[in-house]
Image (cartoon, rainbow, N blue to C red; front, side, top):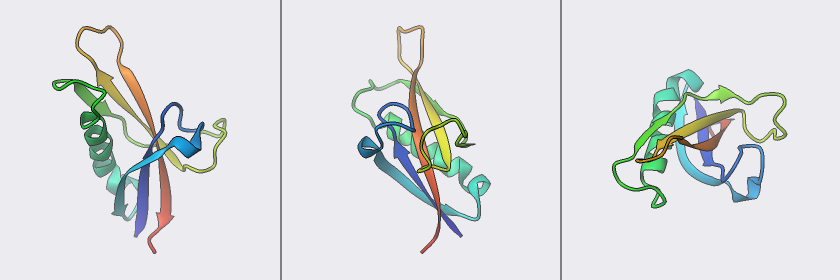
Length: 104
């Protein structure tokens, strides 16, 4: 069993690591077993954020392995949440880092 800790990044997942905030923890056999739960963690976190008005459209993309060009080795996966604000042409993207660890 593995433990997956999801952190909201204030900018990019590989920068300002001291400002990242833990927003959820899930347990499962592997990343595929917890993907739906991790997506719910991200969409709930965005939906409950007071920066965004009620009635926004929120979605999250499945976890992806951290790319080798990223500077951090802290996260094994990253996720992106998307916020569609009324009256805007662009979505706001919110990055998340995911740490995979053996359950202790």
